[in-house]
Length: 305
Length: 253
Ligand SMILES: Cc1cc2nc3c(=O)[nH]c(=O)nc-3n(C[C@H](O)[C@H](O)[C@H](O)COP(=O)(O)OP(=O)(O)OC[C@H]3O[C@@H](n4cnc5c(N)ncnc54)[C@H](O)[C@@H]3O)c2cc1C
Ligand SMILES: Cc1cc2nc3c(=O)[nH]c(=O)nc-3n(C[C@H](O)[C@H](O)[C@H](O)COP(=O)(O)O)c2cc1C
Ligand code: FES
Image 1 (cartoon, protein in one colour):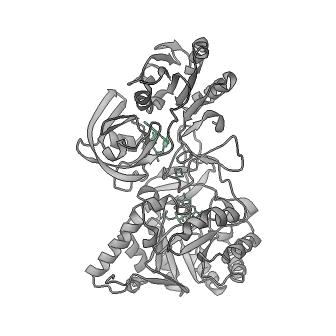
Image 2 (tube, protein in one colour; image 1 turned 90 degrees about the horizontal axis):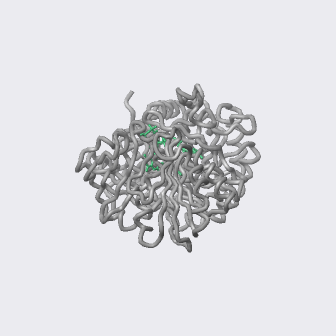
Image 3 (cartoon, chains in turn purple, yellow; image 1 turned 60 degrees about the horizontal axis):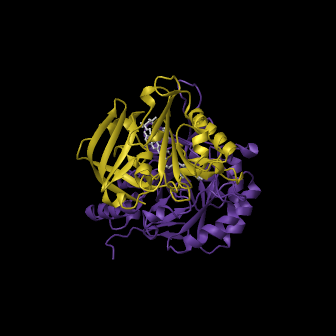
């Protein structure tokens, strides 16, 4: 038995610890399970699912930047139907909360996806991606529009009783307003942040290194931005925040929790060291023991300003 | 697929630009297949952040060899590794070449550093099959023939061997190729692979090709390495997981 209570709560969902794996950085769990025992983690978030399968953007989809990377995957995914048929059976073998991330080009599509997936018992919560910077379809960038975020939250809330998490874009001036809109319309929590819009050029050919021209910046380069966004929400809105952005080790997790995160998600680090998430759980426990922290939840929003 | 920390035992310079890294790793050498690759973390700092993919160049006993050119920061760090220091390796990755089959002559076609995976292929094949290696590069310095057998050379500028590209050299040897049961194994820049594909389709040659793409994870979780499939247009294949070796007919290069 652990001497420390690592559990945290996101709405009605209790996670055994605050370490979750971020959408788009673990596929559907299969490959990463060879490196990290999924049963050890607080939760796992699927790649964004859309109603129909999506092919995604043409290569080059990825480029490295200083302490970060840009990606323009374009929400490549198998679609809801294939997810249920082909991916869920594998995930059922694990005792780890499965959170489905949903992306869509219309509000109706968000609702439809959630409706279909909510009847799957294995799925414990939804994370709604209104903030992917790499898809232009539909002509709308939902994540930058307060009304859209409010509307999507309200409409999705109406079709599921499972915990609802809205994943917010950092590419806005006041992220707390978006968190407020999510909360007022029935969301249980917010995830902050998705990737920042970025671009990179080859100086000789003068062409963008990413075929899509812009991509989403992730990795340690974005951590200070993410911490600031989490803090902003934490100071203005009373609701669980899932902190995401550039986590590389257990110290980053502690920092995110102090800034106001109830849980965190590990993203880009999975590509570099897929064994890290499991190790971080152990290291967090050690940190708590060494520092006399009996419940890790005591760290949440414990900032001293 | 796992992560090992393996000691670097030697760094050899095979020409002023090309390095060979000798690494001790019985865990990997006992299972790795020609054409598979490794994803290497060149530093535990955050820059460069991502691992770098490299083909396994050769396997001798418990040692594996990587061949690389200094392209940027990552490969520069590799070239400066201390002997005895440990290399953080994720692998084995990808599918590798299928060396079995009823052919009697293996034709190796390599452009520039595309020669990297073929010493291992040659080692695995040399007792069972004839091997002819067609090796090309822009000029003399780019032609890499390290540990290859029966080498025929082409250079774009004619500074060494046949003047022209390696596929033109193959055309010249068509009679030789058609007189035997052959299978082609290729790796090199996309421009070369494109003309090679045309050549293979035209003459109905069976050909496996090792492809490249910028990668983040190397094992199928980021979706960063798509390649167009000729069979199914509704989705991409992944270079890291479905490849890097494909039948040349199955992919759009
Ligand atoms: C399956 C596979 C096998 C490879 N085998 C070899 C080999 O045996 N020998 C060798 O010298 N090179 C090989 N490469 C290419 C090698 O990975 C790149 O040259 C290397 O990553 C460059 O790193 P850098 O930091 O020096 O250069 P930078 O230009 O600074 O690299 C920046 C980023 O781009 C990526 N990148 C750049 N060029 C390539 C490329 N051509 N392919 C894939 N990723 C790239 C890197 O991984 C890195 O994330 C292989 C690539 C792949 C995909
Ligand atoms: C290659 C890649 C693909 C991603 N795909 C998705 C996605 O499909 N849906 C989503 O909500 N976020 C996606 N993200 C964003 C991550 O979940 C995370 O919010 C972001 O990468 C910041 O965290 P990090 O710095 O730890 O990577 C993706 C990120 C990367 C790097
Ligand atoms: S490099 Fe990540 S999926 Fe291929």
